[in-house]
Length: 278
Image 1 (cartoon, one colour):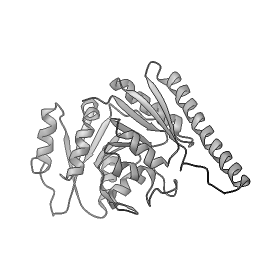
Image 2 (cartoon, rainbow, N blue to C red; image 1 turned 90 degrees about the vertical axis):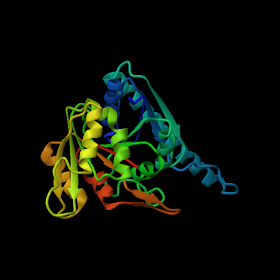
Image 3 (cartoon, rainbow, N blue to C red; image 1 turned 180 degrees about the horizontal axis):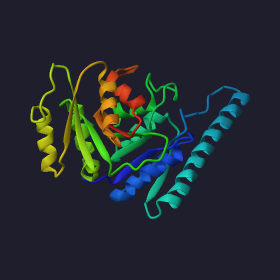
């Protein structure tokens, strides 16, 4: 399977053009369509009996937000023409909250490209950031990217593996990228004393699965000594990883989203592109 629709979340942040370039470079490699989506924030419907002054303020705020969405669409068009001529693209602007919009649009895409979240960056959505909301609600893999331009295919991909459902989903969702990677390494963080051998389970099962797809993966086992997320990032750094693939752990409640500690560490601290699946 190849990616055929890549969704990129647009915004007013300075790294937006770089993010579009990364998504476009990926789309060019897979023959995909780019969909850029702009969210204006909460829908601003007229309020009855609010008075003329309030109505004018609301109209001005709505107009300003829609103008920002138009500018984001123009940035998408300019970036695509300059750096990815011939790659098809489209733009959608929706008057709703960012996390909700991206999650909805992602359900008809193969991959979502978003900015790596930064602490205290975004207004929370139901108690969590937009990226967290999308991960738990979109049903699609989310690729979080740093601010500077990086090629999202062809490098060294590290798989954070614990044998759980989310990690298995992430491997399947990342398969197009794994097939194009120059190197693939499975990193396991273990609780028991003594590092297991590369032929032990559950690593052996994943190695054989990848091998049947034509991917020869290396193995790095890490003895747990502190937070798992920090161990994974240290291992990825030591390996010179260009991307990390991991399961995204968490669950949603009526009024909040609860993200696992390891997932949150990876989301906020990974210095390289991070593909997460839930």
